[in-house]
Image (cartoon, rainbow, N blue to C red):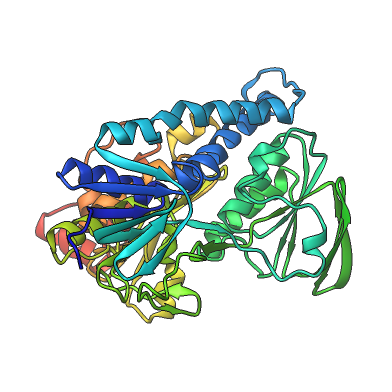
Length: 474
């Protein structure tokens, strides 16, 4: 083979691809970045950024309606969905320059727009040109996975890629799926005045979380008016624009739901189509990439990062994986992906965040563990802010070392990071208990739940010995 044109060819300009491109160029590599649609990928255009902007708009409307909680006259605001989505678009545009082709070209990255495919294990063909490189990185992301639902191809439906382009009123909305995307959109649209119905095949929302965590979110969303149909299968969908009928079947039989709009939020599917992976020597198993912990495919010169890996599909894990790929692809370091300390958060109100193993997983795996919790309602700052729903809990081994932590409550996605650091450094609950936390803050709950572990260790027998040794008279 002739000398490759580039050190690194990155296919896909989402979070993982952008981090890999910027990092490689900054280290002196010759890099080409190929994107078929929009820079920034799902996170900037259809995911994290627009969804959080929409949730904030919805929170403002909700606060106005519930202002009486703070002794202020409530107001039922008029909501213009088109104007709200324009605000979402404005947020995207404010962040967009950071992910723009101009910025990456200024960093020394060659940016090419177009669809392409491998023609052999060392060559990627795009826009009439053969691109050769020492290493390739697949970072093509994922898209909404569509369920096998009779009639779906004949009715209009929304996904995360189209919902933020709405410009008409949404009187009612059926959402298929009660994972993070489905629930965030359910709460956002409910607070914006839409009647929302959520259909979930399983018996629990947020199925990756403990039942007690999910129950807090479920109760709050129900209190705001979201209707849930748990343990229901979808049979068929009919109708047209503004008039959708969904037939479902649950424990009490069949029923038909009606709404003006339908949103699909039943999971994600990796974008592996039409890349010529077979001729590149990249093996798939049941439609998924086969990867080692260094993120190498079966072709050891082709790596992958981001949603396409099928691992944790978060922007922050895509960035982590991009770093692992760079260390391996450029410097041949035996860097491996983190598997133990992976945090995430569902940004409903209250938020639900977790790191490490859950209580459910610990039980299922037969791990000797202990669980300690503390409610937000006993936190002074939660009382002052009127955000007392939820709790924090930690899972430890018998010696108090942290195995996992979960919070459901205000700013859980921010508070969880203390546990992330603690777990990464193999700390014990006692280490958190001994750290001074600012009063009054919500983050004090981390110390309170750690204190619960210390108090549990103070057995009656131990107290007797303490009193005897130190001559205490209480």
